[in-house]
Amino acid sequence: MQAGGSSISQSRVKRAPIGILLASAVAASLMAAPARAATATVVVLGPAIKIRPTDLPTGPGDATIFAAKNEFESFQVVTEAGGSPVDGLNVTLLAPLSGPGGTIPADHVTIYREGYYNVVTPSDPEGDAGLWPDPLIPSVDPWYHQARTAFPIDVPAGENRVAWIDVQVPPRQAAGQYNGSILVSSSGGLSVTVPVALTVLNVSLPSTASLPSFFGMSWYGACPAFYGAGDYCVSHIEDGWRLKALFEQAALDDRLTISYPQYQPLSSDPRQLPLFEQYTLPLLNGTAPTRLAGARISAIQLDGGAFTSYWKQEAQAKGFAARGYFYVCDEPHTWPDAWAVCDANAAAVKAAWPKANVLITTSIDDVNAMGEESLLDTMVPVINEMEPKNDRNHRPDYDPWLGLSARNRLWMYTSCESEGCSDAPPDDPGGIGWAGYAIDQPASEARAMGWLPFTYTATAELYYRVDLMLATAWTDSFANGGNGDGTLFYPGTPDMVGGTDPIPIESMRMKLFRDGREDYEYLRFLQRHGQGAQAQAIAVSLFPATYDTDRTDGDVAGARTALADLIVSIVGGPGPP
Image: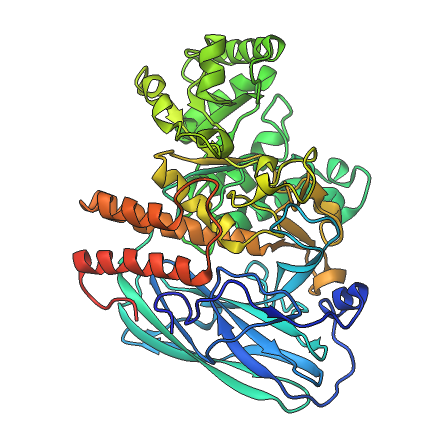
């Protein structure tokens, strides 16, 4: 048993031959067929592994996990059909988790079915054509509390289907061991009880991630995915604001900030400010009904030009000015014309708001080469330039610029360079090992982005889009050489996932992002309590560099357990099993 994960330590598993067409597999992942009798094997895996439908994983029949207060911890329940199909598979909470602090509410255990994305062109050599797990369809959604069509589901012979289980520990739950169970059943008579043992640590995580994120989203990107082509949200403007707010709320539940949560810029249009204050302001001040009580947007992208003065007035009045950023230009490299645009945009912002934060995605080498050290307050290099393969660690090069002003901040971001971008063939070995968010990459490579900023002492993470191809996400999100590049959600329309209200469907990659942020809280706690060197050693041992992040679930679980053991040595109480 692997201590600290969910009892297993594999990241790659045997794969059975594909015996059905991909189209029928996709259909099977979305709806149930008539019942037939079947038998199955049920195993439990940890969260840092992607299980494809023809994999044959091995593992225990129980989940042994640990979590801090106000933390989510996950595990995967895999039902393997064997030689006969399993029809009408269902996964439910049988017994809520109970222990020294009473019973953890049943709605703090969310059960998802892992849907599949069909990869046609692999992102890089780590990928492969075929079905990959990514969309997570909830049995009951956490926003409207409506039953969705996650289950029942059929499992073809020789394949598996997977339930992702999220356990959210309440912030004031007493430390100690809690026991409950999951029931795996089928219409053919299958009935397997999966015991769950949860150890709650005597420490609590903050609701808002200590490592801010700045993930972009188009002002209008969600509307076509839910309401079709056209200008529905233009003529129904409040629906546009409400939909954007729901996406932000879903993101905050995964400790992620969508940096452009507004549907429209603040302006002289009298409709915008009231709608902003109704739908977006609660997400900024921590009063929205997020699952993590009090969670709030950690960084917001403000609109420049004629809109700057309106944002200045509202941000200063409502107390979020320090979290506002003007993203004045993107990746200017050493192109004079591009820097001229950066200069002009930054000058316009500073003229209207001298203390505004100016953000540019660029590297210290490019800034120094162009003599632009005083232009920006927040510098965001791509991870591939922080420490390139076959090169040295460039992080020390940023220290002189950081010392120029107390306002200066260093962030990091991943891009399509983690897969090689569209100009690289899918078999290019340069794409191997980089942290990133492609669907067909090892799970650890998404989770690593919670660890790398600690290792390289960056203070936030940027990602350019979460909704680039949202409208076609179920069938096509290949962009810039990567599957899922710029698209982290799926459109949960009622015809796809049931219920009556449309919802965002979270991806497995978002859960891995969340888990990395929770790992960061462990690292940060140790740093603040005099054990930063020990935390840094564990982090570097797990992910030595930006390009060396392919690890097994057991590797990740072991590092997390080591962090937890150090925390327990400080706070006392029960430790990881």
